[in-house]
Amino acid sequence: MLGGRRIVLGVTGGIAAYKAVLLCRLLVDAGAHVIPVMTESAQKFVGRATFDALASEPVRTSIFDDVDPIPHTTLGQTADLIVVAPATARCIGSYASGISDDLLTAILVATRAPVVVCPAMHTEMWEHPAIQENLKTLVDRGVIVVPAEEGRLAGGDAGAGRLAAPETIFDAVKGVLIAGDLQGRKVLVTAGGTREAIDPVRYVGNRSTGKQGYAVAEAALARGADVTLISTVTMETSAGIEVVAVESARQMHEAVLERAEADVIVMAAAVADFRPTDISDSKIKKNEGLPEVLLEETADILTDLGGAKRPGQVIVGFAAETDDLIAHAKQKLERKNIDVIVANDVSAPRVGFAHETNEVTILEADGCQRHVSLRSKRQIADEVLNTVIQILAR
Ligand code: CTP
Image 1 (cartoon, protein in one colour):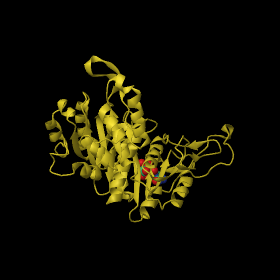
Image 2: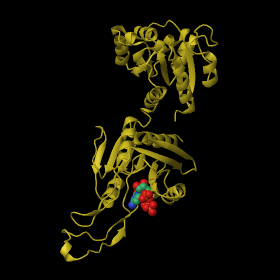
Image 3: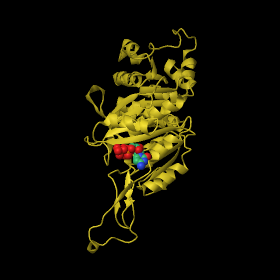
Image 4: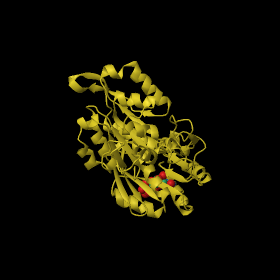
């Protein structure tokens, strides 16, 4: 997910330095190339051997005893991101004032890469106006500050100032790195279950709520895409997403094909496979006897898209299954000639329709297969888009 991205992990001297070890692990596991830079005092809290063993390169500590005569500029120029965790009051003060009094602050001043600062200190220091003003200065300059949290502090104290959890910092880093990776791309997403009218008041429908599709649209927008969402349901969306309201499979089919030039198409909608052959113009009355509803097949939108796929375009389908998940998903991937299928077992707890969470397996046409364990639909959306990005880059 962070494949090959160069991240300088700055560690300064605070009791929370041990959490930087966990952060280092998360970043390396996500594929990042992590270069640890420790200050003098950080080494009093965590041994450099720990980072030497876990990170992608040995620890750097000084401008002067490095093989590279200008390690600060080299690291500052080549980093995709710099994260400082924990960031002490001294480090924040130096950075805000532009003082480069050690390797880490020299890198911070010498870089144009995005910087994520994660403060950690005692409550009295955290609340000191000088610290808050320094942080505000950094935020005004575009630095991302992951605020300190409340909790246990050194020396048995408790209060505000505790370093954010490694997972929170990891998410912030990931958010910054993936922020623009769909810049300039047109992404078309469908969401919700279609409604196939029987008469003016009744319809044949399904249990889809559209949450996963909306999450994909929001995630794509956050990554810089130009997003159109074709949906059967109305939910709040960020300004910037163009929403096209449809109801039936036929309307969705038309709306999608009109916009089929998109770079990426994600069919998260649950499109009806069958619709009533005839729609009664007036409400069918009970006293007219039992109505007979004949069904006919709808056109398969993905099959049409897959048949007309242009080079470089990425088409993603979803497969909501209750049994033989992977086998059914693979068949759909091939039959519809698409690039990715996101398979979810809708009979599993907290998975699929109406839930806030989902658990999926992402299958690619080249045979790659990746299981994504239970997490929020937004996180699933980002995982799907990570796969899309990888395919677009090939
Ligand atoms: N889909 C579509 N057009 C349809 C039906 C489905 O584009 N008329 C898309 C869905 O949006 C989804 C994928 O196809 O991305 C798989 O849908 P699903 O209903 O699971 O598969 P079907 O091909 O309809 O097969 P079955 O219902 O037999 O499982």
